[in-house]
Image 1 (cartoon, rainbow, N blue to C red):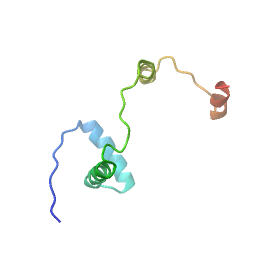
Image 2: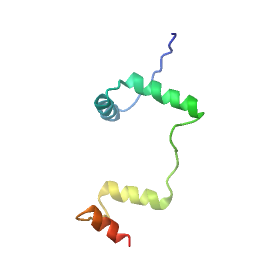
Image 3: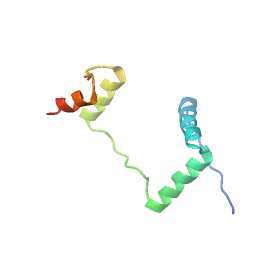
Length: 84
């Protein structure tokens, strides 16, 4: 079977984190990339949705990253009860 090479640059921290996860899954980076490309061809597009978050979602993500405006709950049940 013929193969083609893919060359890509990615920041070292992201690469290390991803490869740690792939290792736990028993996959090599090459296998993951092959799987990703196969899914793109099977679905005729990306195998997940890609969207730009609206302002409210963007603010919630920023708050979460910076630890602002967070509610804490003692249990999952307490969280669910807060929705009622």
